[in-house]
Image (cartoon, rainbow, N blue to C red; front, side):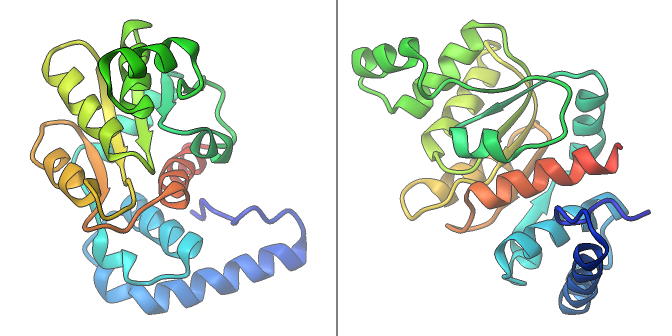
Length: 209
């Protein structure tokens, strides 16, 4: 089973993708030897998207994440992202991929409550009855908000890809997610970002094809 082709659609493209995968495997084999096939695929995609083998040590996946996420995809449940760049990067999904960052309700709520627009967007999604997987690649405040909404019973986030990037709040938000009962993928420390969130989701979407 070979779930990812890195976007290749021609023989030269497939050849490059296969060679890249061989190189990645050789670089991270020791760090991924105890992972399941699906988990290794996630890590390999993350390393490919960043050209940074250190991610093999930073990516942490909760035991129930893969099966929970695949079930959500099989049921065409929604995917909620923190920014439109993450939304745009998620491909080949028959369900809805949503982002509320530009929703006028989120803009108004952020001003009224003096919170970030990313956090406000999570609240608006919850009010709209969101149910599915959350993918956060940039905003720690959005990740904190998701955890609060889940804890209060206001959001049905089945699984969370929590990989915000940065030096203010990112590491803390991911550490907090790892202490919840929510199935998760995180990257330890400040590293993360849009390519990581997209790589995780697209890995599983390709596995289920």
